[in-house]
Length: 178
Image (cartoon, rainbow, N blue to C red):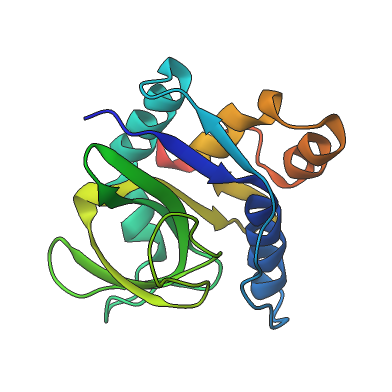
């Protein structure tokens, strides 16, 4: 299924910052974000990035879920939330926990644009099939995953792109995951 991809770039920066701060033990709250970048439905690079993230989803979940289904510090998923018709809003969720084999409960990391009556910090239930991307901070303090964020870098300003690139790992998947 093709999704109209809407991503709040300053929210990505806020998420990356919050994720790193969370990994260092500093409290950081979800923030409202600025501009939305829209890529055409079926944008090939974005579709490829989402497919790559889903191929590694089992490894990611095995790495970040505790025995009781909660996530470790700094783990996030980007999910597609239907907004009516063929469209969905794609938004980061952190923290989150697994509630069943395919079910999860999490918190919107930033303010949704097209989800009525939803705000940053609101709880959201979602299914595994809605996950489009994931991220976590490695022991090297670099952000792994963020497949879709990497696709967006050429579509944003150089300064913002440089800040994001500085915290991203060289490769989206840790080398020991093979």
